[in-house]
Length: 217
Image: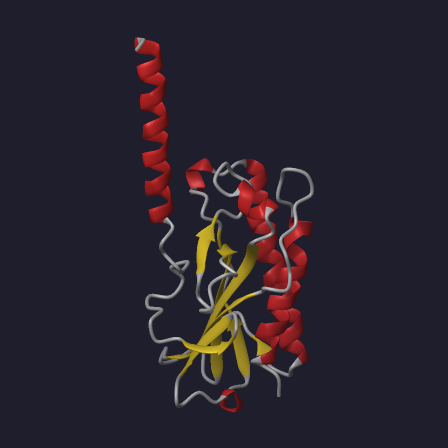
């Protein structure tokens, strides 16, 4: 056998081994926004929550909204200018949506934490949903961008937005409510070979609507 042939075969075997390792590295089923995920209780097919027994929104008058965290799964050092623009656009759009909808509910929006105030913290990320699995949390974090590893998942229409939130007492600061939800009915469809804000906006609107419901009076 020629040396060139042996070398080509070796490369093929190495690629297969690396692809196997890569698939195993996707075993994580969360974004890391919450410190612990084991005690979440399923609330529907693609959502779960964790609620304190003392949770009562009627005791509060104001809401402090923390900056929205966009978990892109693309290391910051590797993010292009267009990617950074997209993530900032997502964060600003969701923040503006929170403010608009929560204000409609009658709560006062404040710029500082204080008495009678809750803190809303949240994160937006992308996940590949494994629809063949029956458990609600069968999904894998995926880059919020079209990469070599994520392209097929976007093309196969298996990518969804995952929204996560927690509500804390501003003074204590006790965590009173936590939830996570896959926006399963809003597919992330590409225009060409790039991910644009317009591709994600319908899912973001649906997530903002879900968050608003927790502040309804």
